[in-house]
Length: 581
Image (cartoon, rainbow, N blue to C red; front, side, top):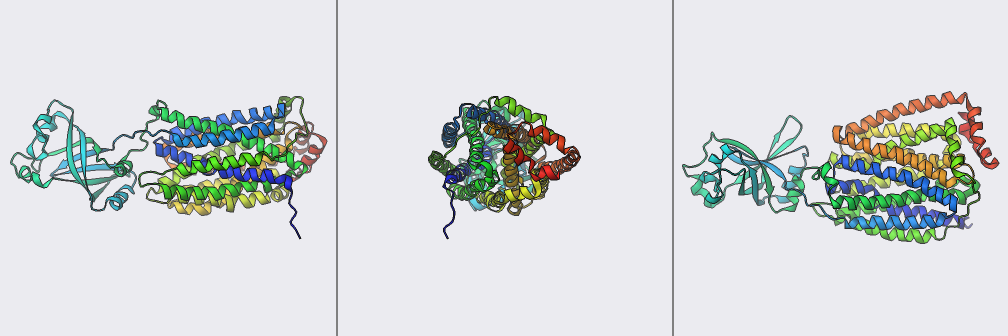
């Protein structure tokens, strides 16, 4: 028996697969690329706040233009091209020259170079990389006037012409043993690495000179270290290497942020118009939306893990090379454009007053609560999208295969989380209703964040990602289908854009900003803990409010049905969440 294939649905399935496959190689890695470029969590959080606001403005605007002028497919394909091109151009972001590492030159019977950091993996990385090597380094040190008396003695081998006692700086050239690294644990949780300074063999005569330092001499000064070794500098570079105030003055930053902005505008339009086209093609079979959208999860899962493996395999010891993923995005997005040309979409309704019809949704208490729910889910989604990978990298920078791990994270999110929930979303929503599904999503976020806050080994994140089925798969199907149900005829694309704008423009933008501030002030673990407790509270509040509204069901439902076409109104009244809650 031959399988029954609906050929009209093949182009929308292909779009979801290719669009998500095209954005998967780049979207999750943008925050960590920004971190590699030297920007702080506050800068990254602020960028994604602005991007979300831009998405908020783009989605309803493009939705309105699509519904008003009936140019859905033209705008849809144009924005796909815009997205692919902007992402590809990020690969040409100019590099920023990073400052030299700052160390301490310490003398107390012996001379050492000290570097203190909260990253305990640096010393291990240096020993594994350099083994028994010795590096010749230049130290540009700040000198207090009273130190010159000691620095100008013979054993420091400063040329007489450089022994300028009126200068605030001195340059020293010394050999540093990279194998013999001592450790000193500080009370603030930082660890200081102590590098032994080797005196050259031809300086033995100077060492034996009476004009040298005795054991009672002590000084400590700050120096810039230049060993002409990129790996050493990358390990010892302070994070962030670009201050928050300096970032906005860099043309490199504006190129990176500008291309991200253009790509975000394109993605926002593609997502909102694409979902509206999908529901229009499905017609009365809107419950099948999840089975179309799951192909996006398949594309995201396959190409995210492939992108992670490629980045790790093509990268050097000093930094990750993302060139391959930008080429992947360009090629796959071109294929998405070809698939989208085959879409057959006709608008069945045309609202004479789109803005007025959509505005009526704010008169319904259930719709207002739905919009608030979208905002809160956006807060949590922003933390995962923008700072989960950042948190994993902070847990252990010793991981050489971090991008591979991050690829596996996205693959599990898609194949073991989103895919089964998208596939069964129609059945789940019929069984428990949209309202109960909303409460379940809030509870799932709370559990997920608390588990993140307890992580010690980044690889233990993999089983936690199974919850992505609830927090994204079930959430997205609930949000899109509920918006389609309550949308007045002829405003479907506008409504999808409005809901997407509320979710991303208000929720994700606020979550990005707050997440960036918390990461910078209290760290990743405490940030996820705060969000987890907040979502448990939101779950309880949402559940109680819905129980209260259960007693006022009929009045609120009538308020919504009044603005719907007869068929859509009957569909809404038959939803079990309006029967049970």
